[in-house]
Amino acid sequence: MKLSINQELSEFLKNNTGEDFDYESPSEYVSDLIRLEMQKKEAEKVRASLIEAYKNVSEGKMDAFEGDIRKGLKAFHSIILQN
Image 1 (tube, rainbow, N blue to C red):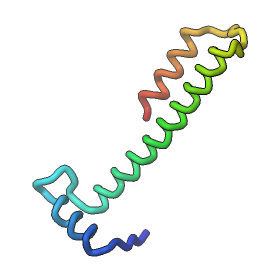
Image 2: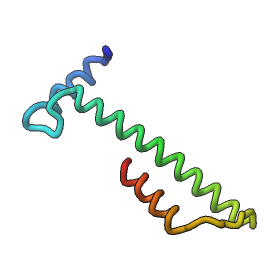
Image 3: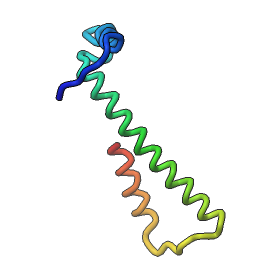
C-alpha cells in the first residue's frame, strides 16, 4: 500500500520515529494509529449498545435471561481481553 501525506505530516513522522522514539518507523506509527482508531470505533459501538440497553431497562423493556450468567460473563471477558 502506498500512502501520500503532506510535507507537514511527513516532517512530523520523521521527527517522531526512529531509535529514540516509541516507533522505529513511520509505518509502525501509522499502523498503531489505525489500530487505535479501530479500537475507538469498537468502543463507540459498545457504548451505544450500553446506552440503548440502559434506555430499554429504564423503560421496562426487558427479556428474561435463561442462560448461565457466569458463563456469559466469562466469554464476554475473554473477548474484551483479546482487543
